[in-house]
Length: 267
Image 1 (cartoon, rainbow, N blue to C red):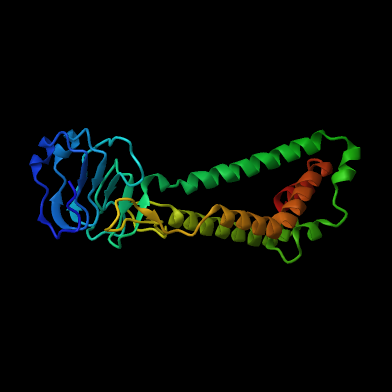
Image 2 (image 1 turned 30 degrees about the vertical axis):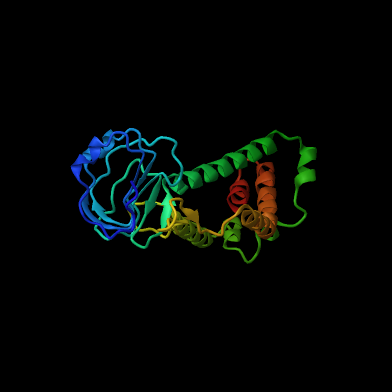
């Protein structure tokens, strides 16, 4: 049943649940209102269900479609919505918003968790570097030692060189800057996370046109772009990473002292 873009009004009849052999139901791009009837969950043979670009509210019943693709189950469950809350569709494969922008539900990223895992991995690696440094013989310290002083390793223009100071004021300033950066990073991660029932900074990557049952990607992000991004990031940060590792590596040779703490924090 394909009734898309027919200026249909009213609600979806509850009798729709009696069409047990129905394989596709396309009601997109109309003016249908009300809620999705519970009987639609009985349509176990459905392979395609398009409800987007209507004025439906409430919750779409749970429904596992056969042979799902990204464009199998689409509804107006994205944000911003024409209503206070977008349509709740737990089984949708694609969610669209009131601006006719769409994205796959599998695109929901837990960037906060990823960031925590990344930072935890970096911290764990640095701990391994410290342990390895403690276990090395004195001769190997010279191989990995930086010929420049600690301030040159961190960078004299960097606020993190304050960690190498004995001044309490310098340490307070460095910690304040560090906390401010963590807060900014947290706000950025929260804004970049895709949450369909909340208006975020995420840019939807698909469009589901009237003249085609398959949604197409509009994003320019590709593998080549990520490769260049990684190269630019490495070129920009590699020297800082190397100098930081030098400080962390050389810190333990000062024993249990304040100098060791300064090298570890600075690194």
